[in-house]
Amino acid sequence: MKVLGYSISAADNDSYMNSDQHEVNICRCLDFVKNRHLHLNPTFKLNKKNYDISYTWDDFLLVSDRFKQFCIDNKYTSVSFIEIPNYPTKHLMTVSNITDFDSARRETKFLEFSPECNEYNEVVGATPVCLTIDSPLTDNFFRTNIEFGRGYAKGPIILVGVETAIKLKAQKLKGLYLEKILAKYDWEKS
Image (cartoon, rainbow, N blue to C red; front, side, top):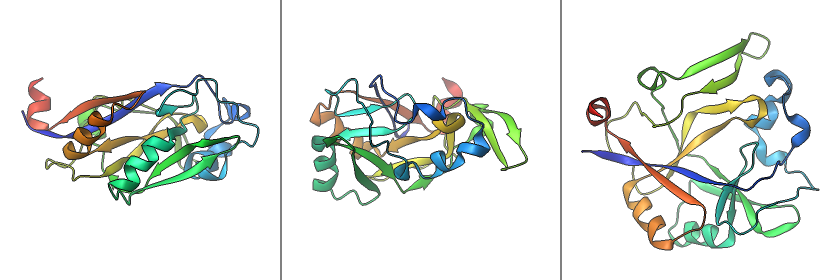
């Protein structure tokens, strides 16, 4: 079985970064999806603080100082961090390396297309992850080119190379879950 890398899942921290955007049409909240680093709520309340990595209900990926330091120590230049308001030890993590998700093979559903902004309000069918490439990801962090979810709560799937996953597992980070990304041939057999 050929493993291309791992997708990252994280614990739910039982919080909203911007609950006022819930159920807002995609065209009116597209900036929240594309520029989430500009939309950190200054009165944000984090309900579950003990995770090293977690997601808000509206798909903001939050990491601890420990997770951030791991990325700095390993020189992962594809990740960046912004301190979360009111929580100096928590950071919004974004990833700049983009890899193509194979939506046809995964049978991803694109729902409620809006010609006004040329976006789908909802995209479902992210896991298990299927990539268009068939070679392993390098030791780094990546994000899918497609964002999944609904409305402003859409976000990419975060991926890591096999070597990165091994290093992450060794850290025993609270809230981190990793799922294998299989090569096309192995995925079709499973």
